Image (tube, rainbow over all chains, first blue to last red; front, side, top):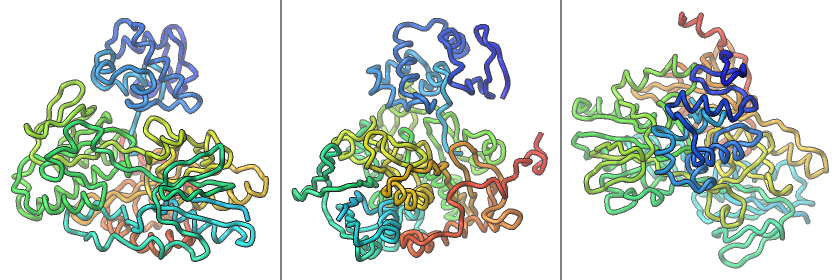
Length: 105
Length: 418
């Protein structure tokens, strides 16, 4: 775990650049993390997904599943892959400042 | 008489029935358990069936033999739960009133949720091993397999027993090697995760296990559909993987009745407090085992530790005391790694799997996060424990919460890893 300055704020990140504390997250940080993931600008459609994921994670901070995102935000899976190419579950989780979706081992 | 109704007489439900029968005063409480299927399946044995190491008959017992005689057992489909009215309606129109409801309806596979899977090639070139029936069909297929590409695909997480797909691949490596045809079989693991292992310590210590067994990993693979005629699976980002045999771990969901009764999330898992299993919505409903949305593995060992803590806690709760937030997500599981060896994991909500010795620090006999012959024997002996200790509601002399004793936090030094 290391500290890193993102959008002018010092935050803890893990080895892959995921925020350690979901409460550190700001919209400005999201925009910076999106750039790291190859998304130069966050559109309204991106925000719809990010906002839903933040809301669904709630206090637990755990990121929703792909199916959770699609059924909750109304964005189709195909669209998700266009918005967040290659592994949207992981990218959404990172940009929304939530934990990486992972297996048990 | 006050009433407790338990829905589901699988691993979790059976353990709850035994614990509550033991703990609750039978002059005050009537316990009823409902399940549509009279057979109790030893699900941890499904993984051995495709390789001819277990038969269907071995893995089935009568549920009623594991339910205490004082508990009323009903065999029926569950039509609807009406939490506002504290009622459960069964398919045969029986209405059960309850003071407390325990939901233990588990989860199941839904291959029909992915286009192309459960169509004309299901049971031919597309198989699974997540039900007894499908693992028996796969055994036949494996026996006659002439070689080619085997793709194991996880449709979406969470799934029951998350390590089972990897176990399948490692056992397949062993199986085809012993048949003298491993050079004619290509093994591929297509997973929606970013790799076979995602936790840092496990990745460092056993991350190369699949590689050593020549299993290729196709990471970040989210299947959109199967093309059963062209024998390929296609991901949302339009990657195509051809196969001769597809072993699918279809979408897992909780029981339909949970969704229908307004008690589930988008996958019909019922939201709970992850430390007490009390429903988020109703203060007289608990959800145990695979049916809940608790962020831990869907596995019998989790259900076992959870139920061990639940019994006493529930009793306190019925006496008007507050629930203790005790459960820590403790899981342990044996991973079969082929050639008579296995790996043991022990972890909880906060602590990822670490190497060490289990259950006795410094002695073992089981080795955590390391591949040993004894771990494999542990997995085999667990079947006896399951039927004779766990399903009888007897206590195993192991702490239901995870302990750091016996775990090597200095593993980097021990294994000489920088």
